[in-house]
Image 1 (spheres, rainbow over the protein chains, first blue to last red):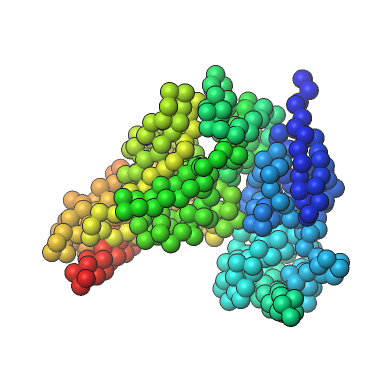
Image 2: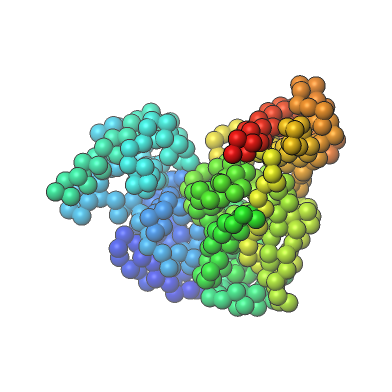
Length: 168
Length: 294
């Protein structure tokens, strides 16, 4: 078998630029995990159904298992590792998950955290129905959805307080 | 599973993209990739070359005027769905887009990509056919327009040539005194629908039904449109709706798969035809009423 052509690309992840050489078929989820060692992004179904691999591409949630790394070279990526506050404390969505017991085994959690981070930016005070709609594309096989819905609403409160403090 | 190896190019101009496809009948165009990447990962498809059009300039537009909506090849579903002008000029596009997968998929997937992926279970190909829209494609001999009626030739098969790229879709606005509705039924939120129906109902000046057409997804192997004017011209009644669904079923071919039996799908065609045609009729009556008041 002939050697597969490699592409040298620059991936901008959580504010840090990484140079990697990958074959074109390298899924973005695999590039993050295997090439960059950012194993916070989880791979569940690997065909776009489960949402575990969701990351932010230029601030918008997308499935990293449905993108190729070579196709992401022009974008600013945020993974679950980039959601903590600058001082290392938990970001508002992470804090809300802790307070509301929003995770059990934790496998699906990175995809929920990224999805909700973008979701409460778009809708800073979601109703319970809107919270459910926000996370409808993510599966939790521990089925801990009730507490995840609570965490969405709590995260919105925390984010509002946080930005209120930042304004002062 | 992981995709099989493929060559990859990311052209910066449309001409380069078209040239890259020349002489490579096994090549595929990559836009949003939300249908294509799973096919590659599951090795249901193994193109020798991917032409990634995401770096092409000037293709992410959504232009609306009184003739209809023009959507560029790189406009994501989410962007089209969020556009209030699209909703005003062609509400059926917005109604259907809200049913396309999940928001996260709509953030990456493109409307034009969905149209030329030509899945009979998808919303937008059926809507393009029902609205009698078209797709503009660029190829080695320039641009041409393919009418929706000529676009879908078989399961997951469009009439684009292998060296052509879809660059823009056109969804015309509604005729006067016309109402629309859309509904689909799926096992789970965001899943492919077991059956979906969209309808256009046009009234005459006196408020009587003058034209009814309905589009069906997951009810045949290509996106299907059926003219229901004849059974419904005398009025929308339980009996005429039943008759309309029977007419629709003569032109559809629902199949059995793991999600639903053919008989259940046929039942959904009956139920949804009645619901959606009724809703489109009410929508048309509201429009007509409003325009008489203006």
